[in-house]
Image 1: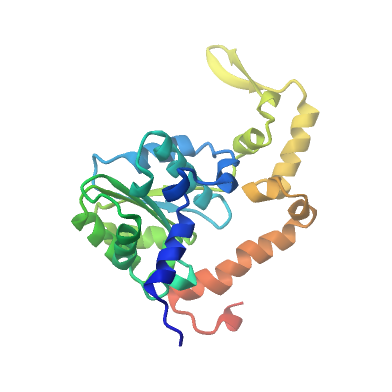
Image 2: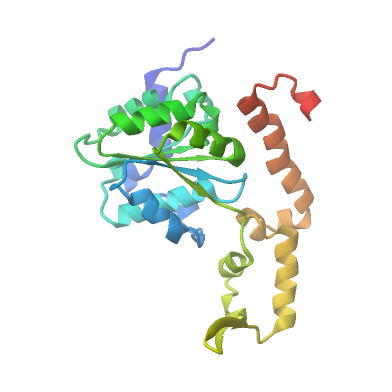
Length: 268
């Protein structure tokens, strides 16, 4: 088997962190609108007063990776040095066999980060690391000036392991599929609902109820996933998208890796 060199690992982590060179997260994520949950998630991600890791959980394709990159963009805008921020896709084959401690060491060596200053480390798809919760708790306890933000797609299993092993060291945050409010916001149709006050209560009124209902039907059909609402190909066959990109990956990747299932075909 071909051995992976430190140079290959260094090039890979540099590719995942373009802001080390450019100061920007890149156009792919920069052009995407942030979800409404960003306003709730960012204060937790930046909070250093409580020594806790932030665990972002949610189904596949709901925008966890994008949300993490939007947090990175805001940190950069707030003046955090680019090399004090790192993003790592844990499930990439080049990182196979490396633990969290190895990935942290790799980042610090390659980025030339200042360990005396605050560092923000993002680990995507954390569930693919065996006993991730034990290693993460150890890092939270031992790493000063470091905020750990991790994400995973198997929400139920992650939540269970987080509660069992976190011991007050993890803060869980669940990112659900899009709400109808977020759907309207992402397609620039918020104007269809107007705030009105009736008897001192804040309510919403639709001037064009027929148009609002048409958008609601579209939302029910394929609006739960941000990627689907901007792709005509996915909208033409949403069943295929849900099966191929969500159900199949849960059956063939998430469940076997989390629960030690050896016969994937039988599970399928």
